[in-house]
Image 1 (cartoon, helix red, strand yellow):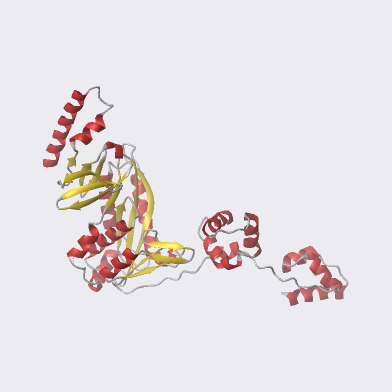
Image 2 (spheres, rainbow, N blue to C red; image 1 turned 90 degrees about the vertical axis):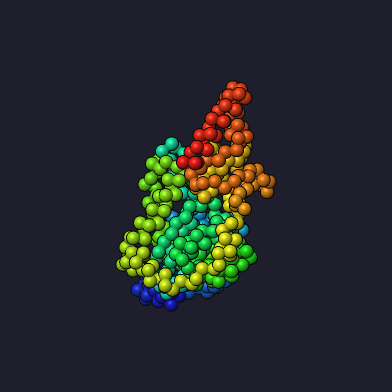
Length: 402
C-alpha cells in the first residue's frame, strides 16, 4: 500500500500535476496532510498506532455482528454489559468502521457441514418463550426442549414451562427412553441451565457432570456464541413454527400437548434436504448403534427430581395428566412438586403447601378448603360457598371416576 502511494505521487510529479490529496487519502487510508508532505518531499514521521482496548475483542466483535439483525449499537450494548468496556459508543463505532469489521461480518463466519456416525451424537437446544392463545383468549407461554440425532436427523420436541437443570435432564431421559438407547455424546450450547459462563470461561454444573458420568455420555459444548455448530438441531427448530398456525384455535394445554406429540410424528416423516430421506427411515438403522439404557432405578432417580410450574388462575397444577389444587394465594407464583410413595407433595419456597393422593389421568382434584377460598368474594355468604363447593367437588369426583 505504501509503495503504491509513493508510485502514484511520483507519477503526478513526473507529469507536473497536482493530485487531489483528499481523494488519495480516502483511497490509501492516510491523512491528506501526510500525503501532501510526502508529495512535497518533506520528512514524514510515522506515528505509532495507539493500542485500543477493542483490539483484543476484534474477532469477537466480528462474530457478534455476524448474527442476523445485529447492528453496531446492539453490539456495543452487548460488549458494554458483558465486557465492561470503558470506551464510548462513538469510539466503538469508529473502531468498527475504520477496521471494516461490519463488512467482514457480513461475509459470514464459515460453518462447514459435518456428518456423524450412527449413534454418535445428539444435538439439543431450547426453542424459547413461545406464546400461543387458546380459543378462550388465555395465553400459554412455554418452551420446547429440542433434540435431534446427528445421523438420522430424528427429532423430538417436549413442552417445558422452565429451562432449569432439572428440566434439561428430565427431557433428555424422556427422549432416550423414547428411542430406546443412548448416544455416545450430547452436543449443546452454553445454556444457563447447565453452564456458568464468565467472559470466555465456562464451568459446567457439578451435578450435570455427575449426570453425564452416570449416563456414560460425553457432554460437548459449542464454542461461545456459535450455535451454528449444532446446525442440525437449529434447522429442525423451524418446525416449532408450525404450532403458530393453531394460535387462537387450541382448547387448552392438554390440546397443545397432543399437538406437540403429533408434530413429533409428522416432522420425522418429512424428507430431509440433506439426507434426502425421512428421519424415521434412517433412525431404523441408527437405533442399532445406540448404547443400552442405564438401569431403571438410576433413570427414575433423575426423573423424580423436583418439578416446577407457575400456578394458573384455576389454582390447579398438572401432573401426569391429572390436576391438583394449591391455595389460591399462589396464583401466578412458581411452586415445586415431587411424587413420593403414591402422593404428590407441593412446595412454595421450601414450605409444604399441599399434599394429594395420586389420581387417575384427566381427574380434577381440589382440596375443599382450597376451593372455598377461591370462591370468597364471589358469593355473598358462607352457606352459599359451602353448598357450591360440595356440589362442584362431587362433579369433579364423578368426572374422575368415568
